[in-house]
Length: 243
Image: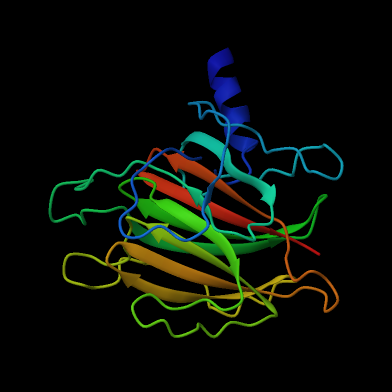
C-alpha cells in the first residue's frame, strides 16, 4: 500500500517531461559545440526542478494519456545557448524491426503556456518512439531549413533552433509519422510560434520564434526536460522563460 501511494505521488508531482545520455552524431559537427550536462537519470520521477529566482520547485503538471512515467530529468538547465549545445543519446539503428523506422521517430508535438509560478514559461514538447535522439539547442540569427538552407519564416524577433540528430519524422513509405501537432501560430507571451525545418538524412529540425523586449539582449533562458512513459514514448520538452 505504501509503495503504491509513493508511486502515485511521484507521478502527480511530475513537471511533464525530462532526460539525457550519450551517442554518436552523423555528419559534420558544428564549429562551436558544447555538451549539456545533467545529473544521473533514475527510475523514479523527480518532482520539478528549482527555479533560479526563488529556489522553489516549478508547479508540476499532471501526466496525460494514461501512461505511467518511468523516468524524468532535466537534460539542460536554465541557460542561454548562444553557441550550439548538444544533448547526447546513444542510438544504434535499427531501433526496432521493420516495418518500424530504423531511427527514433517523431509522433507528437504539443505546446502550452504556463504563466503561473515563478518563473513563468512556455513549453513545446516532442514525443518520439524508438528512443531518445540526440539534439542541439542554439540561438541563431536565422534558422536554415535542412537540405535547402532557406531561412524559416518565424514570428518574433529572436530565433531558437532545436535540431534532432539520428531522428526522423516519416515512416517507411515517406509519410509523416506525426499524428498530433498544434497550429504553428502559438501566440504565447514569448513563444510566438514554431516551424518545421526539414527531415533530411537523420536530421530533424524545428525553429522557434520568440518575442523579447526590443532593448534586451535578444535571448531568453531555456531548458530541456525529458521523460519516458510505459507506452514506449520518449518526450523532449523545451521550456522558454517568460521575459
